[in-house]
Length: 115
Length: 110
Image 1 (cartoon, helix red, strand yellow):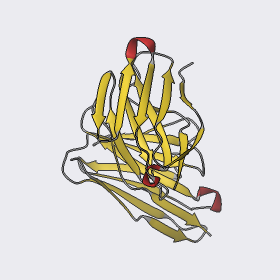
Image 2 (image 1 turned 90 degrees about the vertical axis):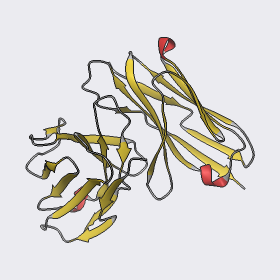
Image 3 (image 1 turned 180 degrees about the horizontal axis):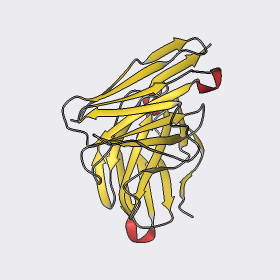
Image 4 (image 1 turned 30 degrees about the vertical axis):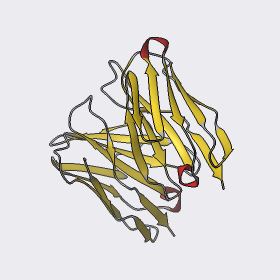
């Protein structure tokens, strides 16, 4: 089946530094990738939608200069949390799909802790 | 507005029991998926089921699109079934973005 690899699975960084999270579709071409954020005991919150070769579309309230998304190829999207603050600590999950109406496949998530 | 509602919010059962989780949605959909998030946070795609019925082992799901609901059935529950079950839908004319329900937290006691 379709596999999405996300790493790192856990990262701890200091305030003010930047962290990059990678999301790769291993056995299919992902025309669209989504990035989600999940707070404890809450549902997933869509942060942005990225299509290969074009700029990401951010949801309302998500700072695009803080959460940089790059979808450089059909198998790789990256989320960079810039100038991280403790309130950015969260669980970040990516998902990928081939076409608009196909099932989504998820990475295993990245738990970010900013100290 | 667009809504996805799941019920019950919490469910505690003994091992071996059966359960039914419900997902109501407010408009026509072209995508509906059920996910299980395990205690480690991993999301597992259970069913892609915008309509009809599917079964996979002890799990089955039914979506009645005309009545705007979907049901997830878990039979003979095991402790490994514990976690949060999410329903997510993509409404027609929504650019296929998934709208997530709040989830049902399931605890299976041994």
